[in-house]
Image (cartoon, rainbow, N blue to C red; front, side):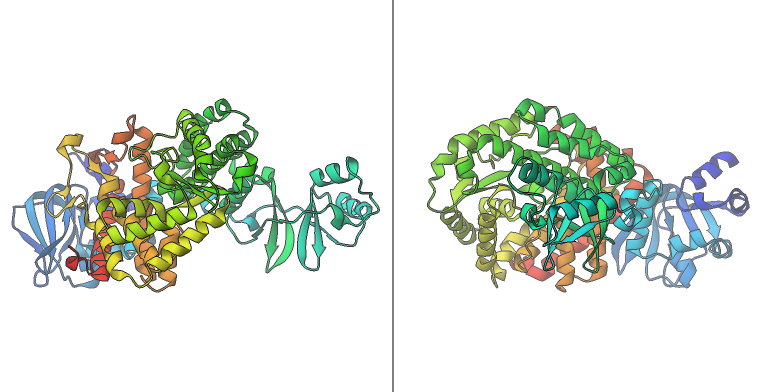
Length: 604
């Protein structure tokens, strides 16, 4: 290997690419190349570390108390901690003959004077994991991730008293150049839009000398000035509005306009939302599928975290659900039922469309058969639009998932008493429910019933929780990733990592009566309730984010829905492989936590 090739290899290993050209030249002059045969003990409690090792070829096993903790292979380095702190609790044993670079201890400690190198090697797991992800994304902290409402230009808010006349209010609005009028009715805020004025004054019988309150409507939607702009985008998308009232310490400080925000973000998500709102036929909605996929690709390319992409896409998908529901269900029936999305859609974690999971809750006293034809029509429309059929038939077209409140309560009773694999699967699907159209109070009633049913029933919860152990984490103690030959030497990200985390968090949320359905929001609530500490919660969130990001890339590249959860680690960049390996370690840690928490070793 030439000097130039050696330099390129060192530069390709994070964080050494952060060195200046002069620092890198200086380092290259001090690096040695060494060979160690199999079974060589490089570092232990009794064998002092003499260098930072960077493996060119071969592998090294790290053991703690006789158990394998990690396996290092080409491109990996170890053990900075032993050099920095002068002690080591692990054994580093050559598993397969290695050729490696050595940066001697004194040279490495000199290198640590570089603040960027120092900050990387002194980080804990969470910080290092986040650091690697930022580097993988090109360290591009886009406006999506860091911008707040306070970063934006806010338009003046025209706030008038409820007793002020329409004429005087309009004069004030004109002077302030405001798009809306906010009416203060004893600290209860109402809003007057151009539509209100047109319908009630120009086309109605209200006169401009009348009180402004006469034309005002309730429902001012606001956001705090310190909130993230991305949340403002979500609220506008979900509520189909063009502006938000901005508050600070409870006081109105301005108006955030959609046009300003979208110019700032420079993406076309608002166009998708507008197209959904204007759609008058299923054909109109069919045309949106490519737009949604392109939106995902754009956001991902900008470095937006997957959790934000899925929230936005889920919000847009829910608008589609609502639009289709309105097309299929007669007006007199709409408030007598709740159309719910379940699974990843209910958790706001769907990006690229997977199979649909949905159900219909009907108010007691209403004939469920009235909804048979509308739901068959709705399901057909969703399939036409591009929402894939659920292989398990968890859809409103299946009468099993169309029930009134009383029937759903009996179903919950049967799930609890049976605890068969089928019952646990159906219960798990239902636990991720979110109302997307109709009367949401019907779902709220069932969620309360569900939580009361499992109150202090740790024995039943343990049977649900044991599913986290259904699939092995695809991380071998000896050779890195465990690959499946029947799937062209790939590994299943969903079964191997995502499922255990999602299901475990879901079960804990049922135990502690947490109403949120989103996995990350559930983890935060578990931390708030003291079930898991903040550091562990952050590890779980970072791991979930990494797994979701790698999975999203695979789904976008896959041409086959059945193969979209499979990835070949060898095709990932080294940093992504490191992130994946770290994430799987946290999944294993979480499985141990669940086993201890629910005493899963005692569950048959």
